[in-house]
Image (tube, rainbow, N blue to C red; front, side, top):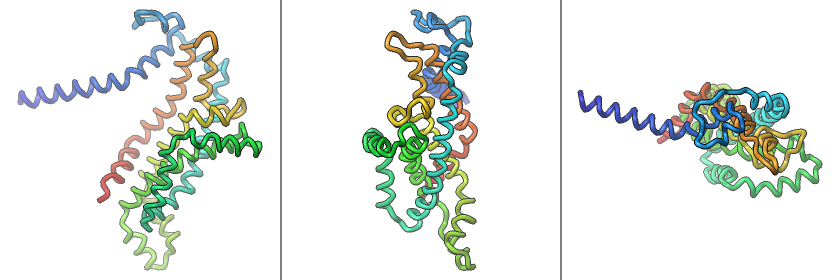
Length: 271
């Protein structure tokens, strides 16, 4: 009994230590968002201070942050939606017809540095007069979302027995009908996982938006630059903006956490 108690105590101490290390940057950012500039740069750091909402008021009132929030939402939702439309049938085809070379090719698009696509995208969109447009950002963000959808859903479709749609086709159903009526309803956790991860990657993307967007379609990660000038950095504004950017992603992850874990683990235990 004593050994079990000691092992439990050690386990929770280790978990608590790891959690504190992981959460420390976020907690520091959260507390700094309620500090004045003087309190943020003071040394030694102030653990006890008079909180202020001035940083958040500046973010949402002076910087038109809701416009940037709308832009990020439009780009994220549409790019993920189109990636699902294209990626789900592609993943099903790869899983059922064992097209491993195609799967590797699509995954390479995700593994390649995003900056390698940036110059071609810039040349193409500038010549088509699509700079600072939703189309340019949506297509560029699909380079992130589409490989994630295909990669996750291919492994998930492999966990679904082929006999399920084959029995439906014996009864007269087409493969397309079996895919929509049988396979997709069974793939809910995988689809939620792919959607959540793709949206988070799109939401946090900085590089494509930095080059392809301007004032009209500026997204949230780029909006943080409004608090950085040549002379100084408004750390309070930066921290408040970062908290505002991270909050939707955190809420989305907490809501769909169990589905994400289930979707990833079901694909991982295949074989």
